[in-house]
Length: 219
Ligand code: E4P
Image (tube, rainbow, N blue to C red):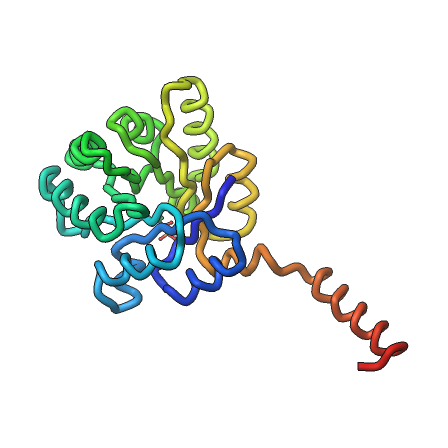
């Protein structure tokens, strides 16, 4: 399983990229709005930092397929080597995915909450599907089961090349579960990447090595 970072904060993206742990970035309108910067400029800057797929979502105000496809072309044009157009899972969204994929523009179908939605998006031509496990957990459903079901479903059909991006990842246990469930990618907030790095025994081990070394050899 690869990692994408789920943020529009360029400092977090730079830090994760320097560690060599991320293969791409996902954003959404809420994440970009949180940064309070220009939408297109933020995506362009992100694409200049990470050499991998960067998901930029059509604005939530766009609902018609043709409008989403037009906006998707603009997002793709920001950096055609990296940009992936994120489209919400609706009937109009599926049409937009079809229109964009016919032009060779990769799409990420977002807000996936059922296995059938994922299968439809794959058949419409989405390069990626994003099942949101944390938001399912929030309403008392077991989000990871959705990732497992989609992975099993896609593996039954070798002609499906759509990759599964496990999204709405909220903690390190989600990450382990996604890898075991067969997600191709987990998109993870910076805070969760930090939680994955740290372990109290690693920290106490470093402190003991340092104390033992300094006791004999000095600072
Ligand atoms: C990623 O594609 C999604 O935008 C993101 O993971 C949503 O996460 P949230 O449910 O924590 O907002």
